[in-house]
Image 1 (cartoon, rainbow, N blue to C red):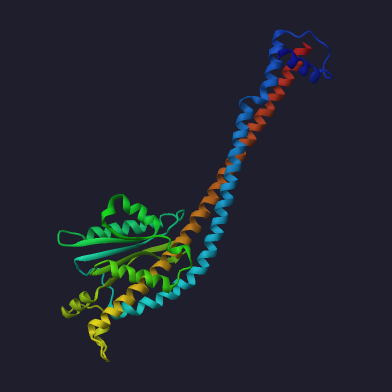
Image 2 (image 1 turned 30 degrees about the vertical axis):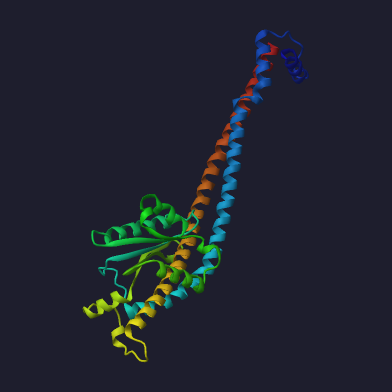
Length: 323
């Protein structure tokens, strides 16, 4: 093996130098030069190239995800803004009183099924936990209804026994009122409540969302508050005509109010999710670009150092052969 290396080195330097006796030191130097491409310098540059390739691939993915999120946001934003007109009349009619004191509270937490969207889901969960502490007590009962995989994954850790209903996969298909109204009807049939507190993130801009809680009271609580002189809304200013009683009208109104509030909450949270994902992916793309710049600089320095070292070794070997 050593003789073969020496013959190859001799052929490499033959045209440049005159024949000289090869000493042991020169032989060792030539063998090291032959093995240098497989040494540490070659491995380090290869590792840097692999890392640069990985960072470039990640940057492509994050840029593509940002474009997809922007496209989805444009499609949902208009529908979310239009859906605000559904529940606002109910707020004026029946009121929205989050401070009302009731025994049975159901906290409906709205979240996303997918991640990579910043802290939007953690915000909803924190708000829900804070509401749970405020509405639970010795003579009170609080339960969760969870919409979305991410909130479910966080609440299951320490509140599994308090989760009545868990719904995932809601956003696989385009959201519409019919789909959400069926979901609202299922929730109303399977939970006992005095107050439904819907926790979601209200869309404000691409870089901003507001944690929001909407309260829907049961018909019995609405009547109780009205009789006790509580200010709920403008319902008492209207006269009821026809064969329906006030209780029946309240029952229909509260059911419709909850479906409208839930529809708006799901759309608002979906808008906030896409906006947060756009911001997160934009930040990730910029960070990937900065990492790529640092890796490129490191690669160039390592490659230049390797080339300089090889030139020094070649010149030193040639000088040793000449001397």
